[in-house]
Structure formats: structure tokens, C-alpha cells
Length: 611
Image 1 (cartoon, rainbow, N blue to C red):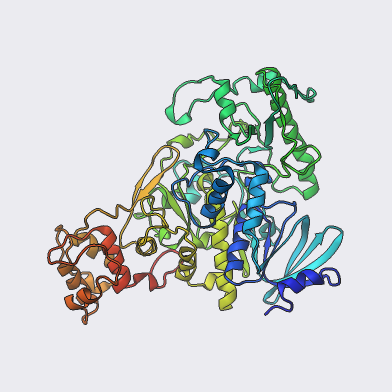
Image 2 (image 1 turned 45 degrees about the vertical axis):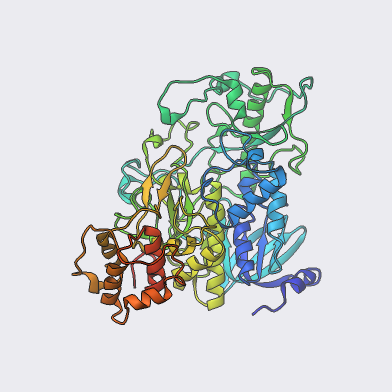
């Protein structure tokens, strides 16, 4: 129960420093924003505290306004955000301005859209607010924050750590990992023999604007400038092709071109990537260390203006509300990683159906980007050819958001429980957006049911996400607007009907193939893990028909009959007309299984096994 309604809480700020909410989200970045929106929509009184005056984190405040991945899987709040971008700029083609992404936008536009989405009656956001301490008092959290010049104590039932670097869980000494895992620990053949604390290169992005052909926006020569550092920046060859350097300076500049003649400068090859590990530093020490990252970007900018002739491009003066017009925060590709109830490793991604844990059944977010790591700026980094790591699209298990021991805490953003290698895929913007949405749903259900996150019904969280038009399975060929989307997602999440994964360039895929005919054997084999009575059931490779489907269901539910099927065939949502010998496809099988057996209602544990 709330002591005050959220509206009254805001009014009380002027006279009281003791605030109580159901859910406190620390960090209004990509995941914190979507977590807050989702939880609020589910009726939970939620407060986000954010250190900057923007929402969106890496998408906006860090200037990385080019979405990597999930173009063919627009899910939940990621889809809502993208549609609002389309509406603002005038359709999909209007945001396909750079070749690195299908969706590029001005950071300030992204911030405005996220703030529009975050206009929920159960959601409050405190900007320019820093937290200083977190403690557990019985079943409640007490968090000290400073909003402006005023100190507040916030009491909450649940906390989501949506900070950029996993700072809340670190403060609480929740077990986590940092850097590269060893081959032995994660069982990943691509991992180094020995663990280390090396993280990915980071970038302090800058957004440039074209001020006209006659303009000269050349900055003063930065300290320590050495043009040789950037001599290979025009190499635009794709590492996946294994070809030699391909110099094309114009093409390089089009990489992150944004609408309205702006350019996102976030370039890895002899560009403004830098190796700088500030994760374990204090807030003050981080700020001091980041001066070198900004300076490195200024050096690259000077190179672009003087060596490549782009003197007409200057720092955009209409993007960020900062004195130097740089983004408010840097782009962190990697943070601390939680030791969660489960840890998602490369095997779970590359071979989800045959791996020793069917974590895919607990999926709450999806991604299709390849395993992408930036280590060009650190000569000490082990030489791992990440291009050789071939994976299909994947989903993220719910248990990777929940600590092994700590109650009342959910971890989001890039700090979820995955291996270092897998982090190269789960760190990307649409995945983090949907991880945030899932963490909000998880928190809301835990709060409403008065249980800890580790005790929630996984299927309840997944169903809440499906109701929000979010994917839990990465099926590229069945979209949220499909009338059978939820049924196919549910049956896919049981593992009864499996998807087919394909590694495909920079946008990997998993296909459900809804129109493909299904065999008797495929149906029975899929059902056996849920219904032991089918272990000895005889099935051939013949195509599945309604008659055989009825025989299978009678073995599980003796009262079922062909007449039962015929009576409610249309109500089940099947498109085909029922007739003897009809060849059933995977879509129809999924709909019928969902309708008559409802295996999705069988509770599962965090490893994906039926309880």
C-alpha cells in the first residue's frame, strides 16, 4: 500500500524528504525507461531517478541514435518507440539515413518521444537526481537521493538496477562478473583460457551538423593530436568478408548519418573508440577519466575537419543541453554482469533446443544481432575472431535478471547475467529496451502478488509481455499483428514446436514456418516432455491430420473426441475448413495445442523445465 498517491508524493516533495513507492528504478536509460512504462501500465506506482535531464541513456544521452538489430522484430515498447520515430520523420525511409542501421534519429527527438511514452499516471520521473546509498530494512528498501540541492529518502518494495554500469548491485555487493570469462567457467570454446578484467572499448560520441559548404567549423587543435592515430579510419571493409582494407572516406562518414544533415560519430576503426575501464571508479574519478575520452573524440573530429576536408561539419549546437554540446554520458558497451539465477552462455544462443538447459522456454526479450565486440584499441585484449561466432536470433531468459541471493532487486540494462561473449549481442539497444520492459513486468507481478522476483510464475510474466505485443520467442515470420501471434509464441515457448535458427550476416534469424505441414512424429515428440503418457505412443512421418490429432489428445484427455474438435473448430481460430484427411500445418497445430491442451499454463522453473 502506498502512504501517498504518486501525485501527492510529488506535491509532498516540498515539505517532506521521506517518499514511498512500490517500485524504484535507478537509472532512466534505455531499460529504466521501458521498465517504468511497463510497470506503470500494469498499475504499479513507480518512480525513476535519473542523473541527467533526459531519458534513454545510450539511445539519447550518449548519442548512439542508430538502432542496431531487431529491425524485423519490432516488439512491445521498442515497436512503439520506432513507430513514433516514423510518425515524426515521415516513415521508415526517412530514418534510413545511414548504412549502419535501418533506424537513425536525432538524439533530442528520441528523448522527446521517450518522455511522451513515459507519460503514465502511475509513473513519476525525477531528473538531475543522484542516489548515494541503498539499504534493506525488512521487506523494504531505503534509498537516499539528492534531487537538485534537496536530500530525499525513498522507500520502495522493489528496486530495478537500470544504471549504465550495474552500480546499485555493486553497492549492495551482489555477486557479479567483470571482463572476460575463462573457457573453463563458461564452457565457451571462443573464450580465453584465463579470465581477465578486459572490457570492450567505449566511445564518447559526438553529433556533428552540416553548417553549409562555405562554413568553417574547424576546432582548435586538441592537445596530444597525432594524425597517424586516425590514418586507417576510411577503411569500411566488412570484417565478415575477410577482405583487405577498403578505403572510402565518404562511405565512412555516411555510417552514422542522421536526419537533418547530422552525423553520429561513433566509429571503431582508427576512430573515436577508446579503451577506458572506469567501471570500478568513483563518480568523481569517472568524470575525470572521461576527459581523455572526450579529448580523443575531439582529436578525431579535428582529423575529419583538417585531413579529410570536412570543415563544414561542426559540433551540433541544437542537440545536447551541455556547455560543450557533447552528450551527457559516454557510450558504455559493457558493464558489470550479474551472477543470476541462471547465466546465459553461447551454447544457449547458438544451440537453444539441444543445449543442456532449455532456457529459451523462459524467454522475455529477443535479439538478432551478431556477437559484436570492440577491442581494437586495447592491444592486451586476447585475439578472438568474433566474426567466426555464428549464432541464430535468440531470446533472453528471465532468470538472468534475478540475483542468486538478493531479494527485492532486479537487474536490467547491460548488467544481466550473461557471459562476456554473449554480452556482445545482448548489449544492443532494442534488446536492452525489451529487457527493460520485461524487468518492469517482472517487478509489477512480484509486487502485485507480494512475492519475491525469484518466486513469480514465469508464464505470468511472459503472458504480460505478450499482451503488450512483445516477443518472447524470436520467430521472424510471425509478427505481433498476426491473429495467431500469441498462440504461436506460447507454443514456441513450451518447446513443443521448435523454430529453425539461421546465422545470417548482421541480422540473424529464427523461423517458425507456420505454413509448413507438420508430421505425426513431430507433434508427438514435442508433446512427450509435457505428457508422459505419450512416451509409448506410435507416430509415423505421415502428415498430421485432424483424425490423428484427436487420437493424440484422447491419450491425454480421454473425454476428447472428433465431435469436440468439430464443434469448436472455428472458435479455436483455425483458418482452414475442417475435413477428413486435412493436412495440418504448424500454424494450425500451434493454435489447436494452445486451445485444447494449454501447455503454456504448466509452470516451469528458471532452467525451463516443467515443475
